[in-house]
Image 1 (cartoon, rainbow, N blue to C red):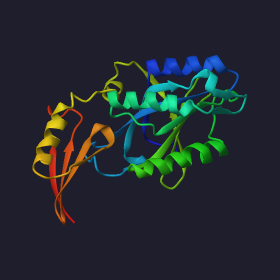
Image 2: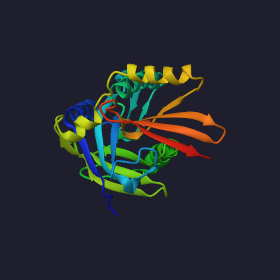
Image 3: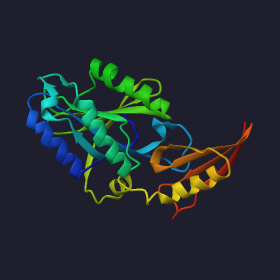
Image 4: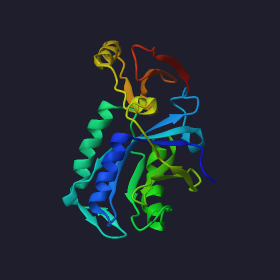
Length: 250
């Protein structure tokens, strides 16, 4: 059955994708998509995210693999040695700028498919399943694959926690001014506030641990005692929006 999530792609990302796929056609092409995931309700930053919880998948950025670091054929494409380091540097820069973005998906083309397509065995075992295993370590119970076809449609497929492949339909191209894209690319305010906040706790003898959650949330954990932990959740727009404080007894 078709999934319920809405799939959008920013116009500028779409232009990047189609230009690259046109460049290599009729050979298979590849890009790295960065997506933002909007959760139904959107108010449980620490909860695992299942596919059924996702309301919108927004493909906000697409990174090209350098042409000289690709091996393209009519039905296969692979990135060559050295491509990962270059692409990873671009990913880090984009995610620092827009913390809602995630590398939770793959994107390649099936130029031999006229109007519709489906993930191949290699796409499932080489893309969707490994990406699912990686995403699960981050609390996301799904993975995604965009497979361009038909010069060009961009169907999106998801894999859920049961390893079922679920078509989400063609991505809809929207302007970069669309609210979903604007939210996906939102930046965090200057983070001097976090440094000052951490310094106050360190001066009191504590060692805060900070990690990133989905949708731009930051989580700080502070061991107050042997069985008590202070968990502080900072929204992307903090300090314009308040942090949430929780004391967890374990």
